Image (cartoon, rainbow, N blue to C red; front, side, top):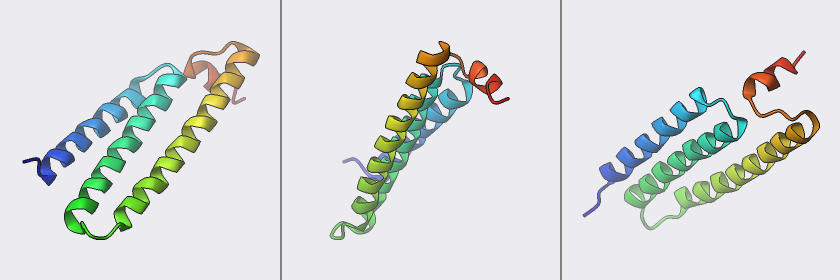
Length: 102
């Protein structure tokens, strides 16, 4: 049987992979994907705790749905910014975006 520990270990592994990828990535798109992986790890842990602590209440699942909406909005906004910068300046690296700051 899969217990709470299995979900927590999987969530921690996803979080570490996403954090490592976000901190070492040179592409803005890869950073967005890694941040999404971190948010999915948080969702997994939140859903696991909700299912094991209070299985008859849907309070934790409400937070999971809210975090999914926030993650979808974050990805949409980040991709729009990346596409806009890429079209206007042909920028692909994060270092180039930092130089635009002024």
